[in-house]
Length: 198
Image (cartoon, rainbow, N blue to C red; front, side, top):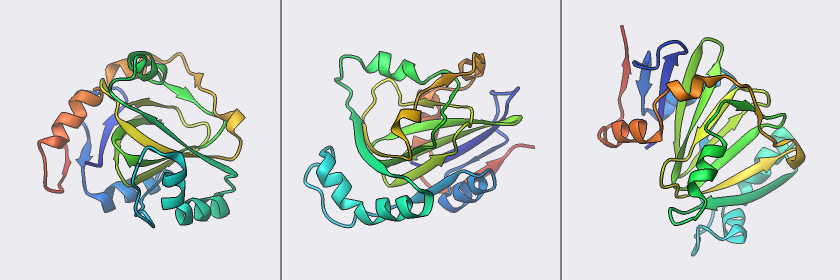
């Protein structure tokens, strides 16, 4: 389930806003310059892990983003729970970092959580199948794929060489709830809802 939880950077114990309403997620993120939208496959895929099939299924949306934002390449990445290096791969992006390149991900299947450190707030954005998120270059953030990562995603680049993690040496990520805690909360909440703290 897609969700958004907004925290004060100094208080990871209680979100100021928590919602799984798609329109509200998109609106809140748009106000911060973060693109969030949902795509539908243009054709059926027999194997949602096959790069050629995935790119063909979403060719129109990929072409639109390339035209609108100047992306020049797209590829497909994925991970399954039985990957022998899953713990190391998860840990690779769990600390706050920036990229010189936009980070654009479309989830073909599975899920992951982006944590965006914007000023004095942290926005935890849970992405799932059919979600696209575009994090602008230079945005401090971290990504949690969970303890048993299982996802396939399309990546778009203007310059793949610019997609290198530059770590901030800020330990803020260690203070915020991990994938397991947030995913469990929203798994238990089936109906769309929004809640703001007093």
